[in-house]
Image (cartoon, rainbow, N blue to C red; front, side):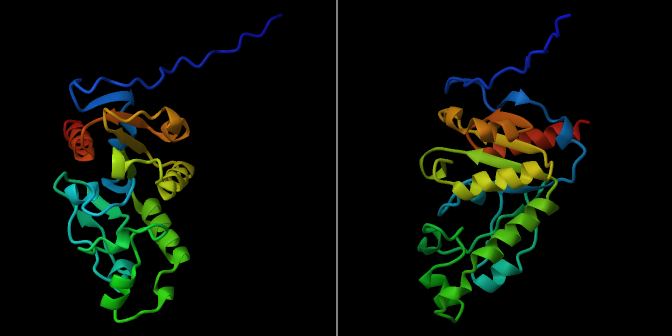
Length: 211
């Protein structure tokens, strides 16, 4: 007697041409997002004047404010849970290995030159807690400075969220090829192609509002 092994028929992620109508769902659906708490954690590269500024303003100015940062209501209707980072008009906080939470500039603003103000363990635990408290995860794969290619922390955040069974909305720019990030794609509940992550959030909010 032969044993028939079912074949996984889930379609592969496709990549639309730049001229395609956006935003659009490439894989999965919004079912799990309709019933979860309407708050999210934003995974993706942190950069000066980056994509999170389209979602929320008023980032912390100091390490102390960072530690006490609270969720923020966004114009989309969803609540932004994190990550928060220290705003610096010079861009000093956006160096390597800091998650935008420490620089000489921000240490001076905090009244301390102590490099120990930046404590990686505390930053990691704070982000982990914010992921745990969020209803879902928004992940953005953009171009150039917003690429996932060097966003090592973002890939770990996706792993944490997946382990916690959080719905993950992975949004990518139409010119970005995600084939090298297929592990990350496999964590996603839905994959959306859009020129800006806020477009996907607006589409998700509209879907929730009509149910």
